[in-house]
Image 1 (cartoon, rainbow, N blue to C red):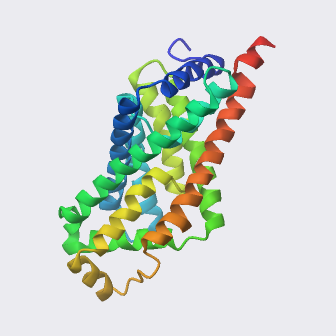
Image 2: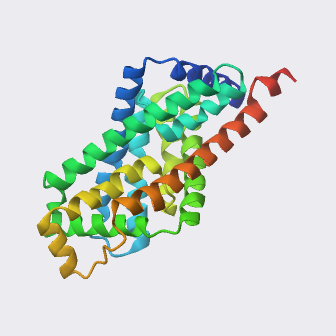
Length: 275
């Protein structure tokens, strides 16, 4: 137990960390958010690359679950700013250490930075030739995955977003409960592996997955290959991306993260400790 913070200590530590996040200089906050968006996008790029030729869905999800969580581990260890994790600033607000306006400012700046980092990575993969694997089949897989996300019912997107961020924020808290490198990585790894294998929805990851498909569609060779494979890309539009996926998934992620933060504060925060 010497290598771990107790749940009460972890809640107190995050309350202080969340306060610092809301007081960070805007440029530093934005740049760390760009970094986080890029790192999460790299998790998406590696899972697409590894899984695009695996026909068995269960095997493909397990491979993705083994690889993607290292993206969050890199975010935690580099001190980058990730929107979904920062929904835990709710702990700081409830504890009286941060203002609601400070939390909302952090969310807005970090969300924009995450979007820039993830979409820059998506453009690099689509236009830089990374999707040429297997004679362009990786590009077809990327477009098909993105189209499926854009066709998802809005209600499903919200619910899967909630489930996702309960696990992501659990990963952040478990990581911060450890005092050594191994504990921090394992803490971040397992909950994220769960959400990836289950296919839950993460707004920052989708800022890579769907734009990568949209950008790939702009490449004539990729679009032609998708048509030859009979892939229906009707739903793959910027409007569907923003309104049918990104918006409801973001709402779900906020609800899941705020709910987890509120639960942790109520059970382990300063108020409960004092009692």
